[in-house]
Image 1: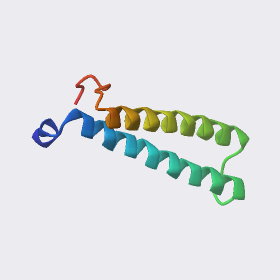
Image 2: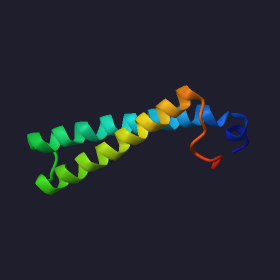
Image 3: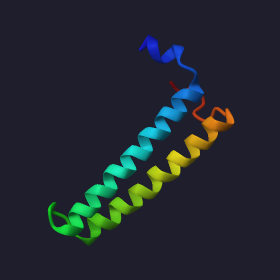
Image 4: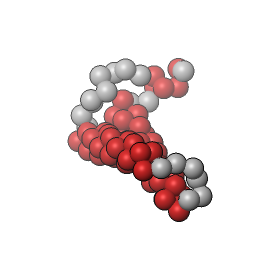
Length: 78
């Protein structure tokens, strides 16, 4: 855990933003597979996952832009 204390918080924000973006891509693929019938699920599950993708994508954009601007928005929580 000492390794995380040596990394600047802005870089951790950027890494977290990339993680949120990767998760949104993963869930988009899950939605596609549910729509094709490969995975079980229905319209309610697809709607839930689309809302989740929206929040993840918004978090990725916010964290990414804050990192590029050099602003710390996580509040030093790490």
